[in-house]
Length: 249
Image (cartoon, rainbow, N blue to C red; front, side):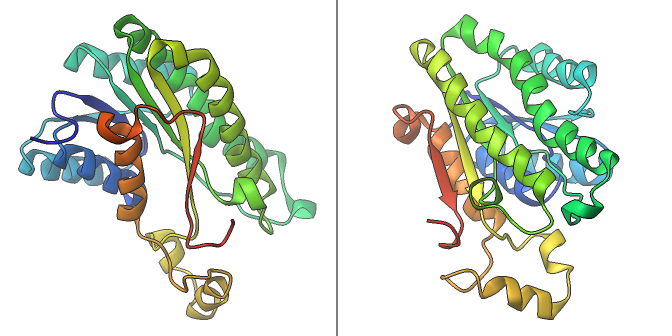
């Protein structure tokens, strides 16, 4: 018996990195998983194969979560296929880092669209189904950057801080309907994006982390599972779980 048997989850940006780790752990605990991707079809299908190997069911759904029609369509596809939706993980996100004096309108709006608008579009499509069954778990992946700030990331920090405020307000609205809304705020993770930068830059980043290492996508996934499982997360809402090695306290 898994902690999420008979539950249905949707993970946006589920084809790689943190999203992949979340999808696999939820599947391992018994959830059927809707895997959203935008461009990386081969990677998404590979994750789906891993979900099936764990004995669960996967639905791969292409969609640009930053586009209202596309985002709402992918939620509809999950609902049409599985008949319900219990757990929503808003994970999709991008960076377009540059110092503010060089920041372009394009880089600003692209990050806002993908990291913040998407959460509104996907969540607004998922909430009616959760209200109908008086149950839901909404978990958004924010960042310590939304709490602490970071050089050359005003656009990214703005979106991640907004997710925290969004989640706190929505948690108040949905609490009486047995729907919890929380954020997880990772620190520097050992993802492909971080590990691809120069070694000396990696070491400079690590000097900021009291624990002295990068986190893993699997550690973020464990926090998602904690919030998603009825045995541990049912009385937690409007909160932030910091998985950051102590970089922000």
